Amino acid sequence: MEFIVNNLPILICAVVGIALLIVEMFMPGFGIPGISGIALLVMSVVFTWMEYGMLAGLGAALVVIVAGGLAVYFSLRSASKGRLSRSPLILKGAQTRDEGFIAQDELTGFVGRAGTTATVLRPAGIADFDGVRLNVVSQGEFIAEGEKVVIRQVEGARVLVEKAGKE
Image (cartoon, rainbow, N blue to C red; front, side, top):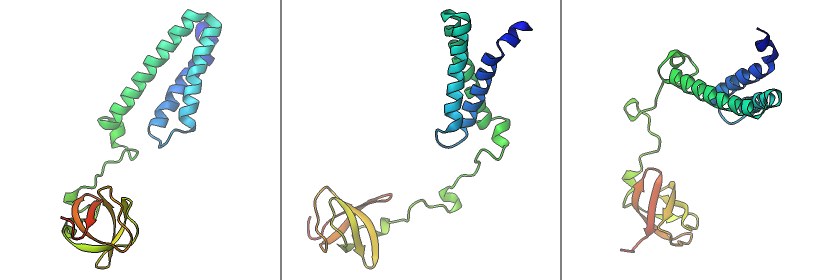
């Protein structure tokens, strides 16, 4: 029991550090919990090194890495298949085309339509097609403002145009 009491700061640093890293996994960004968790894990290794020597410090580093890896593995596994997957913390819904979600307006109907550039295309810019302003891109060529263009290809949000009359 005396061994645990003497090493309580080392154990607390390691356990709280791993817990903070797990919290960081489920929070967006790299913030306070992640930085604090890494700092506490490093402190537990340094405390072990100072108290018991280099070999014990390296052993503590190995234990911290393995324990941290296992904790991350089991929390991610729980988030995908286990108890955590049923919590409100994990997003279950998906936005699919079958449910009516469309990420980008369907622009394939614009292929072949002629319009006028509203801005300079170098190679990206804006063009007007019968009152509909679209973000368009040329194939690397410079097209001045007010030029006639034709939509040649649509790939998702990318609308490829070229000068009208060019074949």
